[in-house]
Image (tube, rainbow, N blue to C red; front, side, top):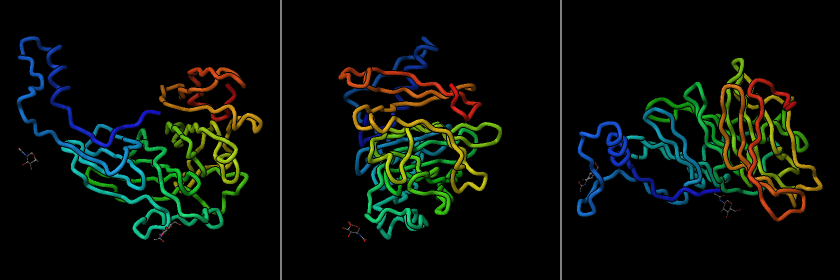
Length: 279
Ligand SMILES: *[C@@H]1O[C@H](CO)[C@@H](O)[C@H](O)[C@H]1NC(C)=O
Ligand SMILES: *[C@@H]1O[C@H](CO)[C@@H](O)[C@H](O)[C@H]1NC(C)=O
């Protein structure tokens, strides 16, 4: 998995100039001059940037361990810093909001960002971390800030053996949110081992339908998981996901076969209109 650096620099100047060079050869080409001090907007994160999300619009969302930053996309000014962990911190409003009942882990955990994706239709951001059983949050935003965050976990609907609201794996997860027949579907792919798949675990690949009450996912979801025998020896890393109207794709890196030391990259395709995962 690639890592983004801590420093984000606005390079619109460079990008804009190179595109216009191609489109309009009469316009003088401007490259960065090493003798000029450019005053580019920057944002320096306290830690490695783990995820980044943006849509056409004024906001940029950036996640690091225990933080979700909302930045102005035009000048990288920090508009909001939402604390997402450690889970026992009094500064973490999101953590104290989570009524997980007996599902709540006994230990305090740091929150590494595993998933940060925007809803394809609404102004909603979904974030899922390594803590609190891989639960996701839904953040409603306007042009200026995140207005409201809620928790996609219903204590009464999850158990150690079946946890529809357990989405992210600490070993890595990718999600494509997809809207089909007015339902928000999460196409989820997670790297799992026997630890992760154990109590309140997530699955390898699943399609989870968000409840219309927007407080969790339907329990009757379809999923596939690596057989327990191979879970610790056959890691599948999901490195990217994207979709078309008809399909959702996952790009993987995985061993060529059960005992091979060679790795292959594969493309997995699921139907964007059927939730049964028949093909
Ligand atoms: C660079 O831009 C920032 C923000 O607009 C401004 O506060 C600062 O004075 C500028 N620095 C220089 C050297 O122009
Ligand atoms: C949170 O838990 C950690 C580790 O168990 C501990 O070191 C820390 O003091 C706790 N913080 C709070 C605010 O309780």
